[in-house]
Length: 347
Image (cartoon, rainbow, N blue to C red; front, side, top):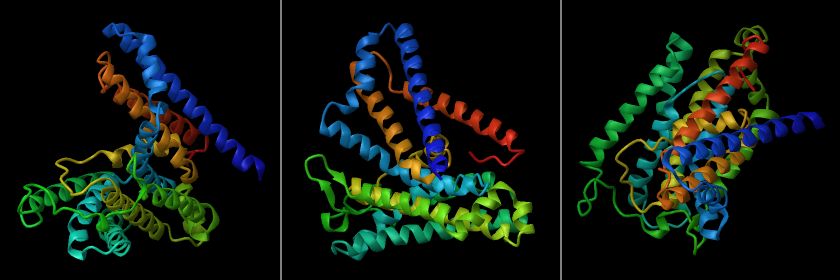
């Protein structure tokens, strides 16, 4: 039992240490190429995010959407599904929150609660489309879900420039009063209680995956669908369920993120949080319990990159180079792990 928890923890620590080493190497190379001050850049990147309570709060804010999308992706990947609709579901959930909350009115707790649940339900329904296409027709979920992202995006763009727009504020939804939004944990740093919701979802997802018969069936389906069917587990059912659950959690995350951090929806592009979910779950080893740590780590890197960009020596885009290298490294890890397991593909 001890090794069951110690080994995954050690794996996470090794992954994070590797990511830190990658960041240090890339930043050093960037400093040498752009003639930046290596000492100042390193101090800003690694120590800047911890310099005061506002910087720490920014890390926590950055982590919230990453926790939601990381959990959504991890549940789908554990079932062997690579569904990209997490991005569109997060975006769609945020839009629905911006539209529904003003319609429900100023009712503290009730309005944000109903809005978040509505975002989860609506995106779960949309997420059923590529899931059912995969389980019933064998259509590749990667392609169908990727296209669904853009369908959602352009429908939202049409609505936000039309019937869903605030007449007094073009290309945005109506203003959200404080009683329509999630309460703050800290008034000074404006840290929202959506962090608590995200952490609760991570714990509940871990319990579901590792402590329930449905979670066991989901994992078995991901490891070996043929064995699952032979054992009496309907793999098609869990292939569908995992993608619907993932889309629902992403929609919930989008709604909670908007209600905690914005006063109206006015996004003009996909935020990429869904795609970041694959980075998070790669670092976390597809373990929901480890997703918050991975999200905090990536948030830490991004706040560090922002601190570096303020120096004017290194462009903020360097962090995306670091992120891409991390994806390649962890993607290679999963590939070789899958080869050793004979194609199971789960870390």
